Length: 268
Image (cartoon, rainbow, N blue to C red; front, side, top):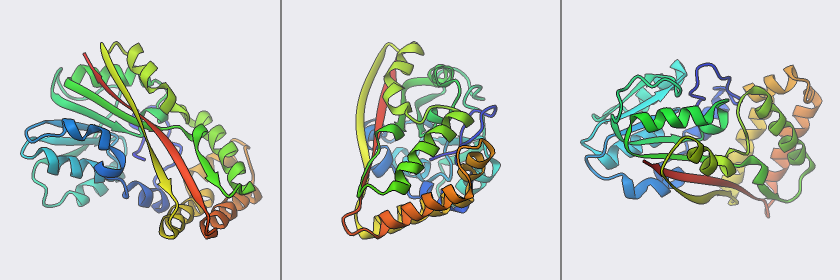
């Protein structure tokens, strides 16, 4: 997921290498397919919360030669995105704030935000700002962590979700943001909101090793771990149980994990 784009908001996950690995997996195909009909050549795009830039670069290839700008609150994320975009002439990256975009009204045909609104304390205000700079459509996609399901029922993953939900809410935003996207867009004043849904499914041996391994490391080494300890939601032993739970799930031949996402296309 990209870094949080409200500069006043804290970011649950941080920028540990284990986090960036999972963020760099994201493409238009696996994370923004609902937006594909809008991404035609000549369509200018602002990607809010671009993170390491993999989705942004994909978008740039689809809409070339139109300009695509990715913004993020993190200097490190912007630097990583710039490195990923070498050789793509119509994309650029800069540090920015979702609540105060440094662009005039109606500057872009599409404003896109993937896994951003869940980390903002004021998602409706951010959507109003996205609406201001959009001459066409605002697109947003967010996971709903409360709706995640998995098999087998590993106790360590039950503990992970309990701790994660509390950490996320304590740091900033709403881990069940997906179910609220349509309501937030309506509150932001959009005249037309089209909602859809899609999932990430991790079930192959390769996917389980990759996703479970990344979260086993995140559980003890990322900002998630730091926040969990600072807020007293668990201790080091608890984090180790969570990491072991992810490893147990990844090793299960029948392992299966689904993460539901909501999506909106908002206009007017």
